[in-house]
Image (cartoon, rainbow over all chains, first blue to last red; front, side, top):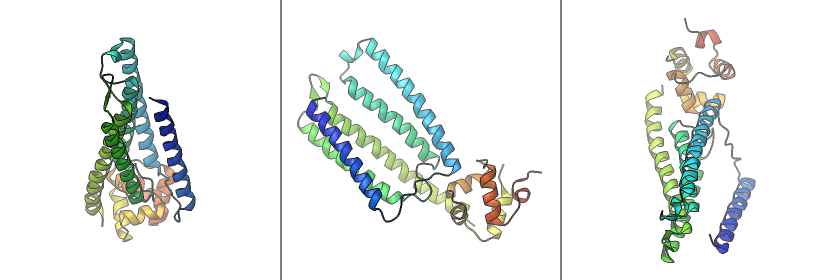
Length: 178
Length: 64
């Protein structure tokens, strides 16, 4: 990664944190975000599965590195590690969504979804502009645009799963109600 | 095992799953999971449910 890119990344994360803090400070309705006991249990299991996935993927990374296979692969180690982190996040998020524990009790899911779509669009724009300036550098996929693309795909999968789960939960609700 | 006692007590009080969940501060899915027998609640949650439905622990959670 170039120094400019790293600086840009750090600036982006810092900006996002500041916006989040301002949003929380001035939000009329306090974000509850608390989880009930079943949700805490499910989230704990989700962390466990994500942790084991990370252990497996880090082992795989060490194996690839020790064999020197990154020299021949069309991806850099940075991009591969980023992909592995995203896989772990996906394992955790999808497990929580599947077991209705992604949103806490009283969480405003619509606001969260809106923020997610903004994140997806920003990353899609970033990936597109990155591809225009060059997707392959020295025979390897460049980190910037592909990281944004992977991020975009991962969040799209989460959003689709949330939508599908939301629909099935609505059906389940109408069946269970009095 | 399904908790039909809890479901019938809820229905008798004319409460939906969401209304009961709001009363005791849990998600609707948690109430659904307890009624379906997919989740065993802690004693604290059992007591909260009993208080909300005006029932005793024995009446709702004792398996004969």
